[in-house]
Length: 434
Image (cartoon, rainbow, N blue to C red; front, side, top):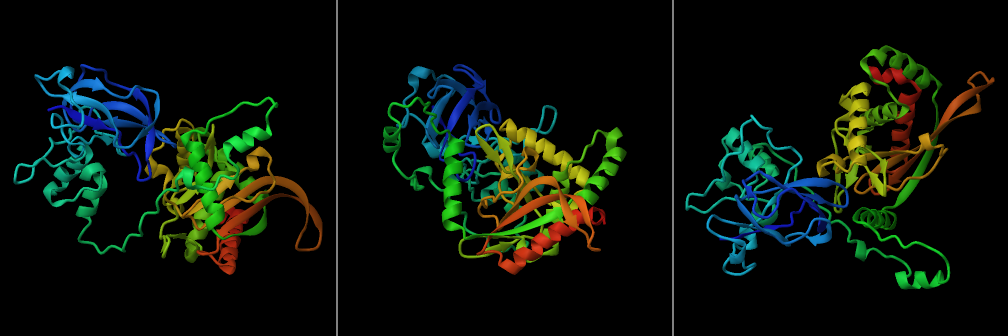
């Protein structure tokens, strides 16, 4: 029977996307795991692979189409002996959507050519087909896990990698998971005067109307939510950078032959990661009816891209060397600007850094990215007169930092301890190597 291919959900909060490019055409034969199309969300462009095999009988949504709702039929596969003329969508002649689910490529890429292929789609004891992603089937086979015993959490009950991982980890005691917070709907966020009212204000003036893309809608909704629902307060400190600048220069001279060049931002990331370990009560996020206190230091860093920004997350940053953090940050930033980050690379973390110092901004206040407990706004290093401990006046390179804090998660004294620890590492950079 003909099988509908549905618009996939590429992240837990995705409601619609843009069908950026078809990688197959009508008449092409596809197998499970073949890449069918590229799908754009508000944050990234991701590949979308087939679960079923067959022939592409009809493409229902043209490439370049925006606003395609999740679970909307976008193409139809036909079996041997069928033709496009036999296709009747959403009736008894085709499989039910629940049986026709296709999937987005998960963050881990499929095994390259020459590697072990994903095992064929399994069936339960009663002969009913079990729908699972190729990656999930491969992991289950390697670990000897029976897919029939797993309840899928993917679209239409499809088993995905996370389901197999959680099954294999089942014997371990796990803390109860906090309910996932639903993404705010852009339409639900207060928008002030209507578009027509604003346009009437500027009748007779020359302007260009710029429609909002998915990223800008999401940014607007999340920042509105953040400022309306998070009780921000702000802590400010200045840090003297001369010791760090000297230390950085010495390290870069030693690393020159290896093609590594450390930035001040790399040291700030490491300082924040270590400070979160020193002040563990501040390494927490707000989860609605509880707080989640993290053990690792997963630090997000804001990266400006055309039309918006990403906050890729450097996981376990406290355990990595500064040069490793530097290389990872460069890779994440490059892929962020090309919109090639997978959702797991920019979701999560407990703390964020926004650095506008390289743009000449001396100080600013950043908006917390929920559910994070805090975000550090970093300004430019400026030469200023300072009073030394012996009372003498000298010139030093001084950088302003503002810590925006969620008062539900971190109280004033705790936030002050965290900021003090960050300053301590930056003013004594050798301690970051201990």
